[in-house]
Image (cartoon, rainbow, N blue to C red; front, side, top):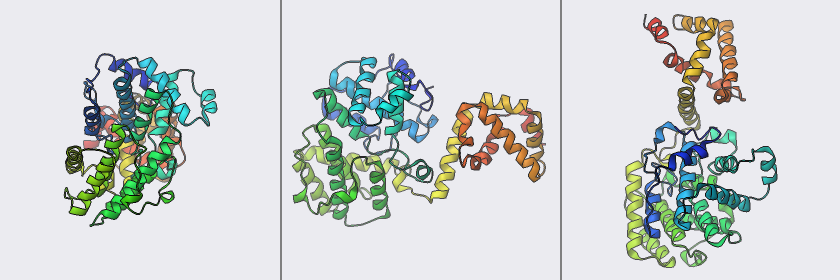
Length: 397
């Protein structure tokens, strides 16, 4: 099983992929549809295009985004170059990202191992994050970058031309902001989801801000810059995603989308297919999509932390169990805690010994970070699931 939070996961990914590559479509629309089906376009990933089915529930949201991004980049490389060379892909991808973010890479080169795949792991980790700081992310329902497909579009340009057009990211983000802003103006029924969708996109922007773009009408929207069909399909889908409401479009909203498609020189058939695809995806996954299910920050933090802690414990179950069992005093205190309330001194001992154990398990150092002790009750909650059966028999008794 790949662990996208551990060093060496990209090499392991390619080792697995060497025996199971997906079959690529020969036309650009088919290629795009395959990506869209995964939810990558919409910022909500439900599957990954590999022949061997990816077990998404085993990963945290940001880990899913890592796998999906590296997989989609590689599929774009295969589609564009008609090659399967993973080493060449990694070298080109690192070079691509260095070209778009040249500042600071001198520092990365000094700190990171010489391996190109190790560099790429660090880059991918940074790209899937939103622009929020670490503390804000913990309390936000917006965790991963919803506009990762812009990286795919830029990477394809790089593969074809050997370089990236000047200010490509900035111009693409400005077009996205313009489309989203206009689409929200067109919507006849406003909902709380509209503000959340803006926050989702705004947190994912890297090169511009919503406030820097002010398009008032369709006539002021220029999309001539975009020549690649992948760019056009993506922009149309984002516009459709923004005006969506319960699968129904009124005349003005429908006119808006078909007018956008006309500006992009896309057919009516492709426009209707885009509308239908957006509607079908949202109706199927609405209960899972972040911006349709906003909860208060504290509740979200607890739910997100619980799932993360549970995943970490499962991955380190054997070692954690061994360390706890070998600590006789800790085991005794944990057993007593099932029968009575521990006093303040005993609780401090439990906390100290658990933190000592976390020091010896690298993946659990999250509990040693500032504020990490707040998560200790979650760790304690899962302890009975990893200890020997005799402990749980005592619990029942």
